[in-house]
Each structure stands twice: as C-alpha cells, then as structure tokens.
Image 1: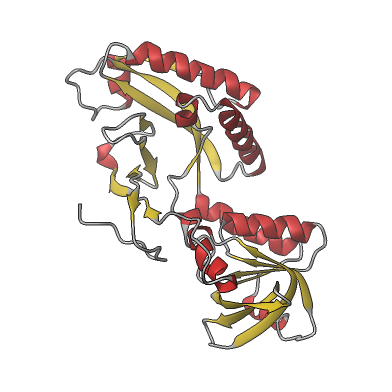
Image 2 (image 1 turned 30 degrees about the vertical axis):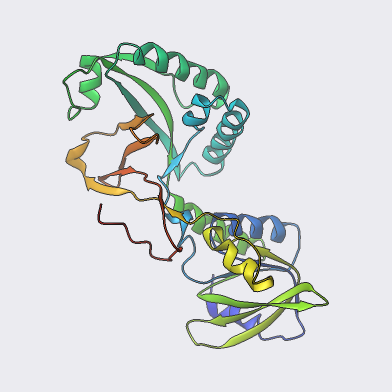
Length: 305
C-alpha cells in the first residue's frame, strides 16, 4: 500500500467513484472489502490512522456475549458465537482462546453461573472454544493467586476469544487494497457535495500537504462510528443526534495484578456493568467504564476519578 500511488488516483477530476467511504475503522474497512471485491471503484478516506478510534480501543475480546445470555437475548448470543467462530477461522493469527474465571463469593453463584455457562457451551456447539466447569476455591486460586481470598467459595471457568483489534483492521485494509480499493488516511472530509439535494461526492483535505480535493461518487457511506453525527450534520445542520456521547476507559495495570494467562470476568458490578480483567502484552487491561461526555475526541481523556 503506497500512499503516493493512491493519491495519484485522485488527480483525475473526471474519475467518478462508485463508493466513497468515510471512516477507516473496522466498519468502513469491511465495507471497502465488500464493495471492492464486487468490482466497484472504491475509495476510503480516514482522517487519522486506520483503527484510530473505537476499532483500536476495544477490550480486545471476540466473544459471544455472556452478558446478553444473562439478559435472555439468545438470538444475539447465537449470532455473536457464529461470528466468533468465523473470525477465528479467517484470522487464526489474530484470534486465540482465552480462559476466563468468574470468581464466586456467594453460595448461589457457582451453580447459577455454572449452568449459564454450560448453556453458553451448548449454544456455541462446534464453534466452542472449550468446555466450562466449576472450580473449587483451591483450583480458582491456582489460576488467580492474587484474588481476594476472604469469602471466596470457588469459581467457574469458561473459554472465549481474544484478538488484536487494530492489527485486524490493518489486515482488512490490506485485503481491501488487494481487491482494488483505494485507501487513504490523513484525508479529512470537510463537506459533502450535493446535486438536487442528493449527495454525490465529498470535499476532502490531505492533512499531510493541505491539498484539497473535490471527489464525485455514486454512493457516499458514513462509517465514522462515534463521529457519525458530525457527517450527518454536513448534510443537514439541524438533524438530531443519534449517537449518545459517552466514553469507556480501560485501566492498564502491571502483570503482577493477575499473573498467568487467565482472565477475570465480573458479571455484575455495584453500578450494573460487566468488568473484564484480561492479560494483554504482558500487562493487564481492566474495564470498561461508561461515562457520558460533552463531545467525542480523537484522543479521549479519562476523568480524574
């Protein structure tokens, strides 16, 4: 992928793209693969790095959604488990099994989560990553020696998937390019071009050189994730927001917090969230929070608390 070569394709002012995709995260890159592989002239524009936003800031899990099982949303769990299996088959260099333990401190948690996670195994079927089982207190501490021991009764171990979100996005960009797509980062879309109230292109600026381009397309796709409303308002400044401004935070801790390769899942915190603590590149990721903010930023800032 040579940026200069792809910039040359923008110089032909008579060239009309079939698709211009705004946003170089997982969704935009997926759309680029779909359209380019079907022979459409495809251009993707990203204002920063590929996977700069949500697609590089996840909890690094490819999972079937244990919390959705708890909510009784079986159809969503089935869909997620199927996609988890597809992702492992398609990208085995990025996806691997990860054992999770749900620590039990109340008498009912062992049988409750044990039965629930057995159902999770059944729903996964042949796409399963491993069988869940109930652990004694001693077995739980063998996996997680730094757990609070007071009141600990045991745990339930189950298996889900871990993946490298940003690297997956880069591989998707490479695949889209191999299929004929043109992908350019540091190209910020500044406005939409309209003809007879129909959107038929974009105005964009190369943030590396400050050169501006007017580009025509049969279809313009907004795949900007949390920035979706900013693109929608280029079309209609009075449109109501459809994205709630919120940010999640992960805390990165030293590996000594959880030695070994087993993750922790806390299914219900005091404020009603699911918390994961997972091994990641010789550190531990803990999260995520969910906090309302006034605006979305390319570089989110955690609050002091």
